[in-house]
Amino acid sequence: MKLHTLILVGFGLVIAGCAEKAPPEEEQAPAMDEAAEAVEEVTDAVESAAETVLDEAAVDPMAITPEKVREWVDAGFIDHMHMHAEQLDDLNFALADGNLEEAKVPANWLAAHKTVRGLPKELDPYLAGMREAATAVSAAEDVEAAKLAAQEIGVHCVACHTAAGVDIGGEG
Image (tube, rainbow, N blue to C red):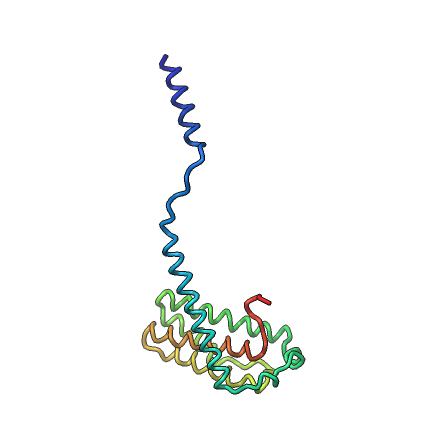
């Protein structure tokens, strides 16, 4: 009888373990929604600021044609832009970790590195703005000030890419 009871209890546990379970309550859903809203707000702010920078730079969108872009965009140029992205990532990761000194290394590179050859003069205002913002990160005395300056770097990057008609988001 004991063996029989043990087998039935074991069989019942196996069935209960394999039964379809209701999904757990989604406790993380509100946090995920808040994070998504924050990302959307930051994205909107950067795009808005980039439009302002575009307006202030007064770059004639007709001055940079697809043909002109093809003249100066080559593998070396793309590699150089990827270096910009890597440095900006390193800078932002260091700031996210609260490490101002570590953030200053890529900021110094962005502020002072050699300009890629062949960049059209029409894009100089964006390069200058990016360098000024990177210099501000290097001069920042606290992480919050450095984060604000780092956001400006991104604004100038987005504005330059927009002016040049370069899609960095993989869309369209």
